Length: 104
Image (cartoon, rainbow, N blue to C red; front, side, top):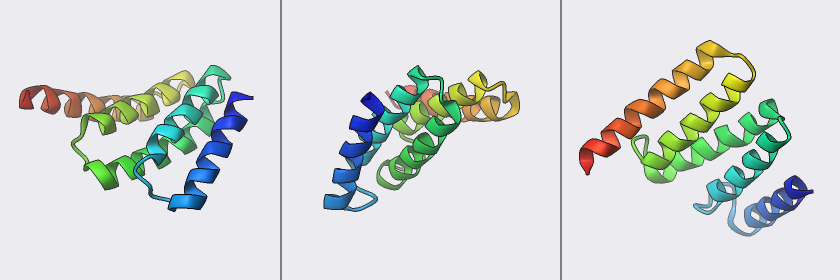
């Protein structure tokens, strides 16, 4: 039920504001989290990659929120035993988190 509510929210947001609204990543994150709870990792990945695309567009590739999304993508791959993909995303996320820490 939570997934359906979140999907309706994003549908309304996209109808009103288009496909690249800056508020969309938050909604996509909620949908992915609900799918994680159901262990629907392949479907969660679709929403996470869209979240990543929009975050990179609005925030750039080096933002800490981009790192957090890359980490979530790595987790989704890890839960499916796709180790090469999860390590790739975890490595990218860690690099961004370290860069973010260095800027503080």
